[in-house]
Length: 99
Length: 170
Image (spheres, each protein chain N blue to C red):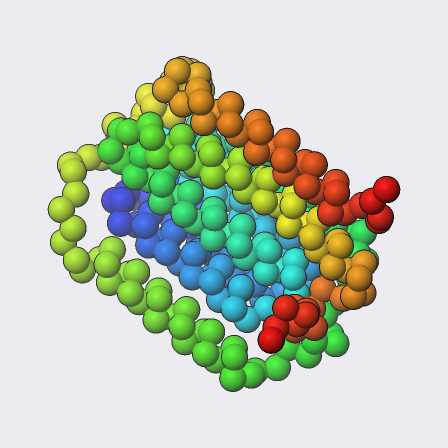
């Protein structure tokens, strides 16, 4: 396989994540789309790391995963707090910061 | 067609297909299950790139820990299908899809048609760097400081999650 094939795959998954964030109104699904984007970037990092024989890409993926785990924990806690206050996770109804 | 090529295409198709299912399903539980399938395919793709350690971590951390957290939250909130949010075609959606397709074409153009000067390489170079032994050695020598800082990040996230999800603070 060529590196281009992996990059195209990564681009496709990233765009699907972008479309998910832009179109869906369910906070949890938006959150999952963000995870999708993080993972597609990880794929291109690992592809380059393996292609160039350089371990730094894989180290970066390791740290991205750690940050993603922390982000998931905090983000889901925020979603729970929002649901407790508004009884919904529809993002259109969360406009308290909108001017 | 070698076995590697067949594996790549199969896993790649399931990878993109399940990603598509994640963003189109109404029921968040089904979307989460498709996301788990997506993560498993990604772990397989990492294996075709000889990154064994990352593949194992992908299954353990993402498909195991993070998705369990997601499913727990969905269960706690007791969400049904989002019928009420009647997903009709709106101006915003068309705009988002157009933007997405434009971005995709841009990325494909960069990958396929621009001749970026790139160091020579091939995937056989990655055979020995993806092992637990090599990554562990690197992690505890060159990357020791970032590794230790990570523990503080995780502690902060843990405390933050508990504080945010608590009913009221005393």
